Length: 336
View 1 (cartoon, rainbow, N blue to C red):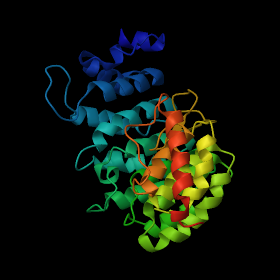
View 2 (spheres, one colour):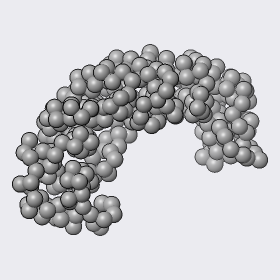
View 3 (cartoon, rainbow, N blue to C red):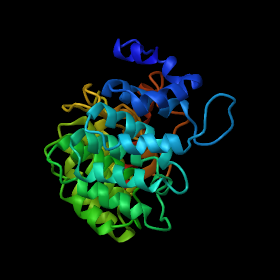
């Protein structure tokens, strides 16, 4: 029944998450001749099996689950690899990730086609040693960094943006291969693709050490004038992380920019055949004024402050408040 629904395009969201379908999904993923059924079943496995915890219905990941995922990660069918990369996340989220699975996922990041690299890099975000922006014991962190850096050799800017984004999520000043990461970020600060330029700025800010922040801040300032709202917003956040206070003067005009500061990177096809999308988000919010207001709060050490978040109802008043504050206090802050 599940296979027929998959082939007919009728597998609904509820069925793909019902624990009682966990074992049928495993059977289909292991043995069905249709790559589409295999891929969808692997996706179903990722939603119906559990890594830990107790359940009367949902099974815990076991040797059978692991065997099927390992095998399908090397499938020649794109849609099957897509499902396998989704299911692999449960094998990577343990304190000690399954080594054969990890090795294959790393290889996809390093040498795969564009969609493989993007999907595999997303799977790596489940490795605990890379989730936290702090030094880690062992070699897991350095292996992931090496794979992501190697993947940057891909010619597609969508891949570059996605991998720089993944690098920045776990980045910190003492990250493994820091000098290599720094070089990769600096060389892309003027890239023509806004997703690459913006993620490079954020990555550089995350790994900058105290003695490098001034130079990094000055290198980033020109990107505030870029035509892309995402590049502007990413640069604002990077300058804020660098604690580069001269940026206060340069970011104030962006309060009047009525634009979304996030970016959806498109122009590629996912492994499952659907249009690919990589969402590049910012911590400060979706809109430019929210990003700038939150940056001002941090750059001024809350000398400029407000309660709550930036909402549709509070936005106009907060922008006026910021401008009034700046008019009265701008002389206190160094010029660029």
